[in-house]
Image (cartoon, rainbow, N blue to C red):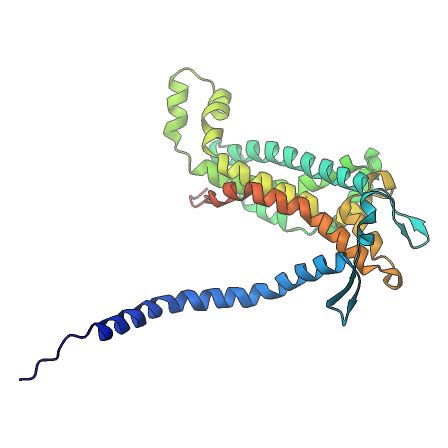
Length: 298
């Protein structure tokens, strides 16, 4: 009977092949992700190169480095026979709009979510079933009605008026999401606080809210990003230069297709995205800790 001798080379080859077989699913997954994200990466790269060049040869090769496209940072831009408002005014208005929207949405959404999760009241089931339906209405379908309401209240061409409209449109979804987090908090936690002598409000504020901090962080981030990227409502109901936001500022740059300065447009677009990127970098840790609840029945 012939005995096969042990060869270290054969064992190493088998080990090498086995490792590569284990890596194949990861290679395929990263390959698919790379192919799907490549157009987005190229888009951002084109914006960056275009913002620092006088022109793009063949549409994608930058020619002549320049800072001319970034002059909007220190002076008002002449465009289409007129002068655009200061970019810093638009930035401040965008920040005020997004921050106010976030504060209102978080406060109202957290209170509404707690009520839906914990308190029994007439019509609760019907309200729960129609919450998502209210969020499904597109903003464009409500523009005429919103115009009459804002005009009647004297809030047309006012950031505060658009903040109220945007908040009202987003509260249903926010309340639904927050309700899921409250559902994951055990009733025993609240009962323990009530037995210790705390009233319902104190239990909610000092015991329950700290337990859903990841949920509050998530809706805060999404609310701010939603406000920062809002365009339709602001474009429709804001007319004056002193109330212009960055999204409307960008629209003015492309209002006339024959006068579009793509270098300037690229620079302003990068400036518009920069706060969002920084905001995401500093808040991604909170987003990674979020596990959305809501699996329980209502």
